[in-house]
Amino acid sequence: MHLDIEHDITFDYNDFISESWVELRMEPQTNIRQTVNLFYLAVGPRTKVSRYLDWTGNAVRHFSIAEYHKEIKVRARTIVETKPTRVPLETVKESTAAKESLGPILDYLEFGGPISKSKALLQFDKALKLDKKKSLGEQVRQIGNFVHEKIKYQANVTTYNSTIDEALSKKAGVCQDMGQIMIGLLRMHGIPARYVNGYLHVPKLASGAAESHAWIEFFTQEFGWVGYDPTGNVQPGENHVVVATGRHYDEVPPNRGVYRGTAGEILTATVRTKEIPAPEYSSYREEIKDIELPVYSEIPDRRISGVPEDQVDQSSQQQQQ
Image (cartoon, rainbow, N blue to C red; front, side):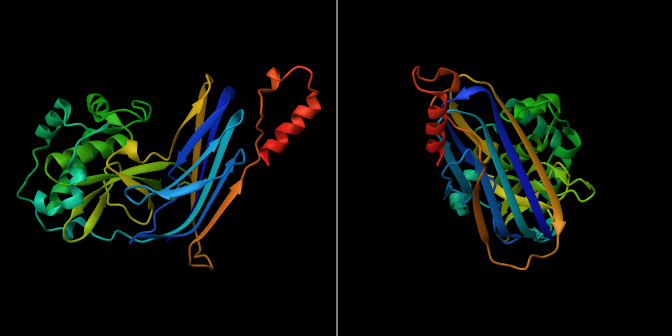
């Protein structure tokens, strides 16, 4: 399947800010189950966009704006080819791996950030009653089923920085919460697990409207990382697109940043996906563009007295070039 994914983010401020720094994880991975053909990124106001790979190999874009502005826009577009589920759970017959054989994978057994080995998680695990006699794949399916049944999908009961305890106390949350709760249970039983930030294409939505999505991957000695989506209670397939992986959400949000100023910020994001024919080109292409938005060397209503307004405007425009 070939998918065309558009992801727009707008940061609106109710007053001028003097400086901002933004980090983006919006470029999907190319891995054994998916191949990126095109990644397009446009940012405004005009600025230099840099790229690096983080410690887990995720592509990170970042930029800064050092002049007064009230709005930032980001538009990403990806064309990606996806494949069906690579490793069905039924084929994962091994038992849980010994810790001494895991090496760097041990990081994904540690608790931290929003995923803590709390009393709430321990109580939740008691109700699970995991059958340790089952194969690793069967244990993961039991845990995924349990999270899907016990945690109701409900928006606006948690926030992006909520811990698993908040979702457990409300027995509700979104894909981020359900994924992190499942990771906590897996780690509690010695199964290395990581958080996946990505996109979910929903074919029945004719408008193409979609959202960022989250699920998990667990580690196996034979197959490496294998995915499971507790929100849909399915394994990730052609409709799932991996953007970034980490120990928890805090390491791989689609965007984060800081700004200098006292203004309030409103963030809006939209995602649209659609299935398309295979593109004529197969190799990776990248395009980075500008979105023209105004910046100012000084806040417009605080310009230095004695300087004509038309000259100040001209100076501001020169700063953008």
